[in-house]
Amino acid sequence: MAEAILDVDLLAFERGSQRAREAVVDGVRRSLATGFVYTSSDLPVDLLDSAYGVLQRFFALEPEAKRCFRAPGANGQTGYTELLVETAAGSVHPDWKEMLNWSAPLPLGHPLRRRFPQLYPEQLLPEAAVPGITVLLAEFHRAIADLQRRFLRVIALGMGCAEDFFEEMVSEAPTLTRALRYPPMADAPAQGHLWAAAHGDINLITALPRATGPGLQVRVAGEWLEAAPPEGRVIINTGLMLERLSNGRIPTGWHRVMAPAGATSERHSVVQFCHARPWTILAPVPSCCSPHHPQRYSAIRAADALEEVLYRINLLES
Ligand SMILES: O=C(O)CCC(=O)C(=O)O
Ligand SMILES: [Fe+2]
Image (cartoon, rainbow, N blue to C red):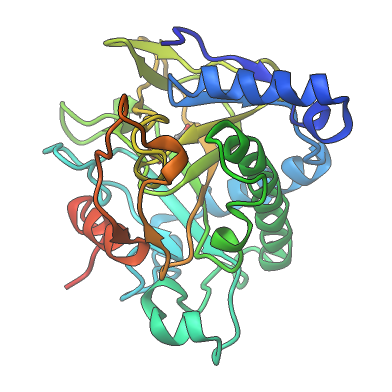
């Protein structure tokens, strides 16, 4: 098992020699034993700067103003979610974080949206409070989603699948981008809260393009390690859906967000959860099953797997 999170070069995979491609596939495969990997990317820095700019303007609004942008019935899949709502599965304390979620809308008549309306809610963004935010965040979402789609090509090869194995699965999926603000811990209402308690993400893979400060930790071989990527790198971590598809060969990256001891500042970050189309049947692929690795998971529909986790983390509204 790899003990370290490796730094790989997605752009070398895409533009380099066969040897360079194989080195990236191998690096990703080894690093993902931790559930985490860092990668180069071509996300434009000015897009990141402007997206973080509008998000900070939103989070700086008064609590009352932010509450106007909640989306009742959307199960946290769009709009604003207040502090102390999301609660990691198995944790008794809700997380000391607030968030804004958005995705790429599908046309009303699209069969995926008709079958799974809760996963494709009408988008709610705070355009009235921060003019221009909708267009900017839509572009930001597209750029990260494209990076994730490309990164999955490397993972597919590492799983012994065709390079384009994930292409159809993630096309028009309810991939979700989430901006988070973690307030200073001194303002938390009680002991026991963390910025985000330990959890595995529900989806295939998650991309974290930038955070304004440390705090993200990864559980590797029973110890919590700081996820501290080199400047400019994107963090990719694995989720429960990929663990199932890979028959456990690619474990879920187990992580939490904890304020560094003595820290007085807040933290902002953006994560994007890359999902499978909700009608995908998630079952271990044959290339990851063998007499040495007998099939460990049964098949489940992606929508059902997601709904179960939303319930467990206190986001499913009754
Ligand atoms: O803020 C971060 O660095 C990670 C957030 C996270 O793990 C999540 O929202 O699932
Ligand atoms: Fe997470």
